[in-house]
Image (cartoon, rainbow, N blue to C red):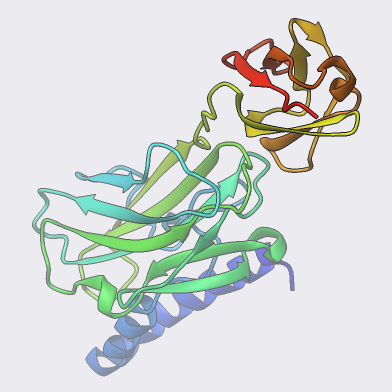
Length: 287
């Protein structure tokens, strides 16, 4: 069954259940409260190719109530780091007495971004939604804060993608509910927030030590980029770096031939963008 078909079936079941509850009375209504409170199915955050909870909680238009939704995130992310994310509902409407949310995080190409982690007040749905390749975090029964007025918030860990995937966007839909146990009379809000990957500043290249073996010179230092080049007394030498990024070792294939034993030279590395290191004065040991 496709994801869109699953969504339609879910809504039909919800409306049918609501009607049955109205016919059967209070006892059946209690059971419906728990069905909603344990969290919705995946794919209702308002993210691309998704709908929102207003599909079933349809008494009012989307974002039409009195209230605000915020997503508190870092200003940027560093790959692989863990951050605490908070979704917060606030309202002056005292008739709002139960709360819910669903959130997903996507890259610019709408792929899953990072890893969400559940807490005591939230639940995790993995590999679901459009294409069955998105993760979602949402309220659980404890996280509905039944009877609470003024707002609610949920905080949970998010592990950033292992590599720089460009800007990522948090999509959330929240339910400021009246707590009557049905899908009627509830206000649905959506919010998004996009953050970039952090800019990593490595600084200019720097030379820390020199070793000459035969005609080769090995240069140890830091922040050498893939196009770094060594200069001996302002003479460019053939240079290659190791496989780390940014590199910490340069190998100058014939630079040893340019420095006679007992001779003092000025060495300088320039990165591919022209950024130079400080001049490093080196005296080759006498034979």
